[in-house]
Length: 245
Image 1 (spheres, rainbow, N blue to C red):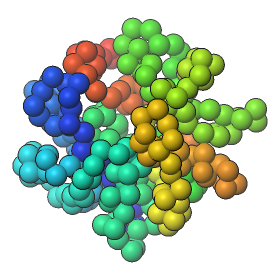
Image 2: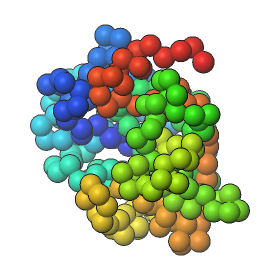
Image 3: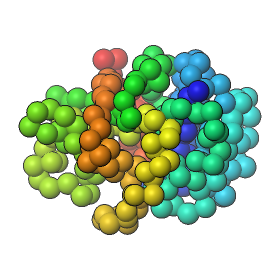
Protein backbone atom coordinates (compact mmCIF):
# COMPACT_ATOMS: atom_id res chain seq x y z
CA UNK A 1 0.00 0.00 0.00
CA UNK A 2 1.14 3.54 -0.78
CA UNK A 3 0.34 6.52 1.42
CA UNK A 4 0.59 10.13 0.30
CA UNK A 5 1.64 12.74 2.85
CA UNK A 6 0.80 16.35 1.96
CA UNK A 7 2.66 19.02 3.93
CA UNK A 8 0.34 21.93 4.71
CA UNK A 9 1.37 23.37 8.08
CA UNK A 10 2.88 26.60 6.73
CA UNK A 11 1.43 29.87 7.99
CA UNK A 12 1.88 31.87 4.81
CA UNK A 13 3.33 35.01 6.36
CA UNK A 14 4.96 35.91 3.02
CA UNK A 15 1.59 35.69 1.28
CA UNK A 16 0.26 38.87 2.95
CA UNK A 17 -2.78 36.88 4.06
CA UNK A 18 -4.31 35.74 7.32
CA UNK A 19 -5.14 32.43 5.67
CA UNK A 20 -2.83 29.41 5.91
CA UNK A 21 -0.63 29.42 2.84
CA UNK A 22 -2.27 26.39 1.21
CA UNK A 23 -5.68 28.12 1.36
CA UNK A 24 -4.63 31.30 -0.40
CA UNK A 25 -6.77 31.45 -3.57
CA UNK A 26 -5.21 30.61 -6.91
CA UNK A 27 -7.63 31.87 -9.56
CA UNK A 28 -10.37 32.05 -6.91
CA UNK A 29 -9.79 28.55 -5.53
CA UNK A 30 -7.64 27.47 -2.54
CA UNK A 31 -4.36 26.28 -4.02
CA UNK A 32 -4.32 22.96 -2.14
CA UNK A 33 -7.54 21.87 -3.87
CA UNK A 34 -5.74 21.58 -7.21
CA UNK A 35 -3.25 19.16 -5.70
CA UNK A 36 -6.01 17.26 -3.90
CA UNK A 37 -7.82 16.76 -7.20
CA UNK A 38 -4.65 15.35 -8.78
CA UNK A 39 -4.06 13.03 -5.82
CA UNK A 40 -7.59 11.66 -5.95
CA UNK A 41 -7.53 11.37 -9.75
CA UNK A 42 -4.31 9.34 -9.54
CA UNK A 43 -6.01 6.65 -7.46
CA UNK A 44 -2.76 6.09 -5.55
CA UNK A 45 -4.12 6.97 -2.10
CA UNK A 46 -7.86 7.61 -1.69
CA UNK A 47 -7.33 9.07 1.80
CA UNK A 48 -4.12 11.14 1.86
CA UNK A 49 -2.53 12.23 5.12
CA UNK A 50 -2.34 16.02 5.46
CA UNK A 51 0.14 17.51 7.93
CA UNK A 52 -1.25 20.68 9.52
CA UNK A 53 -0.46 22.90 12.49
CA UNK A 54 -2.59 23.16 15.63
CA UNK A 55 -3.58 26.66 14.50
CA UNK A 56 -4.74 25.79 10.99
CA UNK A 57 -6.22 22.30 11.31
CA UNK A 58 -9.80 23.50 11.72
CA UNK A 59 -9.83 25.92 8.79
CA UNK A 60 -8.01 23.49 6.48
CA UNK A 61 -10.31 20.63 7.43
CA UNK A 62 -13.29 22.82 6.52
CA UNK A 63 -11.74 23.64 3.16
CA UNK A 64 -11.12 19.93 2.49
CA UNK A 65 -14.50 18.75 3.74
CA UNK A 66 -15.40 17.34 0.32
CA UNK A 67 -12.38 15.00 0.41
CA UNK A 68 -11.58 11.92 2.46
CA UNK A 69 -8.54 13.06 4.43
CA UNK A 70 -6.58 12.06 7.52
CA UNK A 71 -4.69 14.69 9.53
CA UNK A 72 -1.41 14.75 11.42
CA UNK A 73 -0.32 17.65 13.62
CA UNK A 74 3.07 19.38 13.39
CA UNK A 75 3.13 21.31 16.65
CA UNK A 76 6.35 23.21 15.86
CA UNK A 77 7.70 24.48 12.55
CA UNK A 78 10.99 22.55 12.52
CA UNK A 79 11.25 21.71 8.85
CA UNK A 80 10.00 19.21 6.30
CA UNK A 81 11.77 16.25 7.87
CA UNK A 82 10.12 17.02 11.19
CA UNK A 83 6.74 17.37 9.46
CA UNK A 84 6.98 13.91 7.93
CA UNK A 85 8.14 12.49 11.25
CA UNK A 86 4.97 13.88 12.83
CA UNK A 87 2.93 11.73 10.44
CA UNK A 88 4.86 8.48 10.81
CA UNK A 89 2.65 6.91 13.48
CA UNK A 90 -0.43 7.37 11.28
CA UNK A 91 0.95 5.90 8.08
CA UNK A 92 -0.05 2.33 9.00
CA UNK A 93 1.70 -1.01 9.28
CA UNK A 94 0.62 -2.16 5.82
CA UNK A 95 2.26 0.77 4.03
CA UNK A 96 5.28 -0.07 1.90
CA UNK A 97 5.72 3.29 0.15
CA UNK A 98 5.35 6.92 1.22
CA UNK A 99 5.06 9.81 -1.23
CA UNK A 100 5.59 13.33 0.09
CA UNK A 101 3.89 16.25 -1.67
CA UNK A 102 3.37 19.93 -0.82
CA UNK A 103 0.09 21.78 -0.54
CA UNK A 104 1.59 24.96 -2.01
CA UNK A 105 2.56 23.24 -5.28
CA UNK A 106 -0.77 22.94 -7.06
CA UNK A 107 0.19 21.83 -10.56
CA UNK A 108 1.52 18.29 -10.11
CA UNK A 109 -0.38 15.97 -12.46
CA UNK A 110 -2.07 12.66 -11.65
CA UNK A 111 0.19 11.00 -14.22
CA UNK A 112 3.35 12.06 -12.37
CA UNK A 113 1.93 10.80 -9.08
CA UNK A 114 1.15 7.44 -10.69
CA UNK A 115 4.65 7.31 -12.14
CA UNK A 116 6.45 7.97 -8.87
CA UNK A 117 4.18 5.50 -7.07
CA UNK A 118 5.54 2.80 -9.38
CA UNK A 119 9.20 3.56 -8.59
CA UNK A 120 11.21 0.75 -7.02
CA UNK A 121 14.18 2.51 -5.41
CA UNK A 122 14.56 3.13 -1.70
CA UNK A 123 14.19 6.84 -2.49
CA UNK A 124 13.02 8.57 -5.66
CA UNK A 125 13.16 12.31 -6.32
CA UNK A 126 11.28 14.28 -8.96
CA UNK A 127 13.58 17.02 -10.29
CA UNK A 128 12.88 19.45 -13.07
CA UNK A 129 15.51 20.56 -15.56
CA UNK A 130 15.50 24.24 -16.50
CA UNK A 131 17.09 25.89 -19.52
CA UNK A 132 17.71 28.98 -17.37
CA UNK A 133 16.19 31.10 -14.60
CA UNK A 134 14.73 33.74 -16.91
CA UNK A 135 11.15 35.05 -17.00
CA UNK A 136 8.69 32.99 -14.89
CA UNK A 137 11.40 30.40 -14.24
CA UNK A 138 13.00 32.84 -11.82
CA UNK A 139 10.53 31.34 -9.32
CA UNK A 140 12.88 28.36 -9.11
CA UNK A 141 16.00 30.36 -8.24
CA UNK A 142 15.62 29.96 -4.47
CA UNK A 143 14.97 26.19 -4.58
CA UNK A 144 17.40 23.38 -3.79
CA UNK A 145 19.76 21.96 -6.39
CA UNK A 146 20.23 18.32 -7.40
CA UNK A 147 23.93 17.50 -7.06
CA UNK A 148 25.26 14.54 -9.01
CA UNK A 149 28.51 12.60 -8.96
CA UNK A 150 30.91 12.58 -11.92
CA UNK A 151 29.19 9.36 -12.99
CA UNK A 152 25.81 11.11 -13.04
CA UNK A 153 24.31 9.57 -9.90
CA UNK A 154 22.27 11.76 -7.56
CA UNK A 155 24.45 12.33 -4.49
CA UNK A 156 22.61 14.97 -2.50
CA UNK A 157 20.26 17.92 -2.57
CA UNK A 158 21.63 21.26 -1.43
CA UNK A 159 19.15 23.87 -0.25
CA UNK A 160 19.70 27.26 -1.85
CA UNK A 161 20.62 29.02 1.39
CA UNK A 162 23.32 26.43 2.01
CA UNK A 163 24.62 26.28 -1.59
CA UNK A 164 27.91 27.71 -2.78
CA UNK A 165 28.19 29.67 -6.03
CA UNK A 166 28.90 26.61 -8.17
CA UNK A 167 25.95 24.73 -6.70
CA UNK A 168 23.64 27.71 -7.23
CA UNK A 169 24.51 27.63 -10.94
CA UNK A 170 23.08 24.11 -11.29
CA UNK A 171 19.82 24.13 -13.28
CA UNK A 172 18.53 20.71 -12.19
CA UNK A 173 16.11 21.75 -9.48
CA UNK A 174 14.68 19.87 -6.54
CA UNK A 175 10.89 20.16 -6.64
CA UNK A 176 10.46 18.66 -3.17
CA UNK A 177 8.34 15.74 -4.34
CA UNK A 178 9.82 12.47 -3.08
CA UNK A 179 8.89 8.80 -2.72
CA UNK A 180 10.36 6.47 -0.10
CA UNK A 181 10.39 2.87 0.89
CA UNK A 182 8.34 3.26 4.07
CA UNK A 183 10.39 1.03 6.35
CA UNK A 184 13.67 2.61 5.23
CA UNK A 185 12.28 6.14 5.68
CA UNK A 186 11.12 5.67 9.24
CA UNK A 187 14.25 3.73 10.17
CA UNK A 188 16.40 6.67 9.06
CA UNK A 189 14.43 9.85 9.80
CA UNK A 190 16.14 10.21 13.18
CA UNK A 191 19.47 10.67 11.36
CA UNK A 192 18.41 14.11 10.15
CA UNK A 193 20.31 17.03 11.73
CA UNK A 194 19.43 20.71 11.95
CA UNK A 195 22.98 21.90 11.29
CA UNK A 196 22.04 24.25 8.46
CA UNK A 197 21.37 27.95 8.03
CA UNK A 198 17.70 27.62 8.97
CA UNK A 199 18.26 25.16 11.82
CA UNK A 200 15.56 22.90 10.42
CA UNK A 201 15.34 19.19 9.72
CA UNK A 202 15.39 19.00 5.91
CA UNK A 203 13.68 15.99 4.35
CA UNK A 204 16.01 16.51 1.39
CA UNK A 205 18.93 15.36 3.55
CA UNK A 206 17.49 11.87 3.27
CA UNK A 207 19.04 11.78 -0.21
CA UNK A 208 22.57 12.08 1.19
CA UNK A 209 21.75 9.52 3.89
CA UNK A 210 20.55 7.06 1.24
CA UNK A 211 23.54 7.73 -1.03
CA UNK A 212 26.02 7.29 1.82
CA UNK A 213 24.25 4.04 2.65
CA UNK A 214 25.00 2.69 -0.80
CA UNK A 215 21.55 3.15 -2.31
CA UNK A 216 20.85 4.38 -5.83
CA UNK A 217 18.55 7.40 -5.88
CA UNK A 218 15.77 7.12 -8.45
CA UNK A 219 14.75 10.13 -10.53
CA UNK A 220 11.55 10.95 -12.37
CA UNK A 221 11.81 14.24 -14.22
CA UNK A 222 8.75 16.44 -14.40
CA UNK A 223 7.95 19.49 -16.45
CA UNK A 224 8.80 22.86 -14.87
CA UNK A 225 5.13 23.90 -14.88
CA UNK A 226 4.27 20.98 -12.60
CA UNK A 227 6.89 22.05 -10.09
CA UNK A 228 5.85 25.67 -9.65
CA UNK A 229 5.34 26.50 -5.99
CA UNK A 230 3.71 29.51 -4.39
CA UNK A 231 5.42 31.14 -1.41
CA UNK A 232 4.78 34.84 -1.98
CA UNK A 233 2.37 37.19 -3.71
CA UNK A 234 4.69 37.71 -6.71
CA UNK A 235 4.91 33.93 -7.11
CA UNK A 236 1.13 33.70 -6.91
CA UNK A 237 0.81 36.20 -9.75
CA UNK A 238 3.24 34.20 -11.84
CA UNK A 239 1.33 30.99 -11.14
CA UNK A 240 -1.92 32.63 -12.19
CA UNK A 241 -0.41 33.65 -15.51
CA UNK A 242 1.83 30.75 -16.48
CA UNK A 243 2.45 30.42 -20.22
CA UNK A 244 0.84 27.48 -21.95
CA UNK A 245 4.17 25.64 -22.39
